[in-house]
Image 1 (cartoon, rainbow, N blue to C red):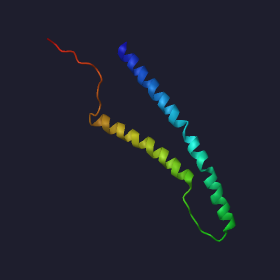
Image 2: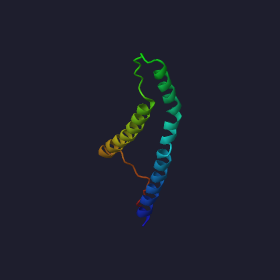
Image 3: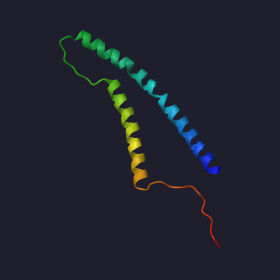
Image 4: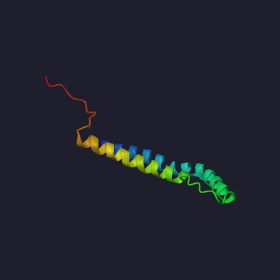
Length: 94
């Protein structure tokens, strides 16, 4: 029963952290909306300009995707090479 409760506790903590992080992503996009609008205005004013700036939305999307994939890769590598650990208290046998 204790193992089952530990699994549920880990799931609950992970769910709360994921929920907090996933809700922060839109705020990252809101912050760059003004930058995109300014870039669009500059391009309209300078019609002959061939400025190909990378979109801030692409940077944010790639950062989020790279972070998720990076942590998944780290977890798989730790699991593969025995990087797991336990917090169990070992009892001395006397």
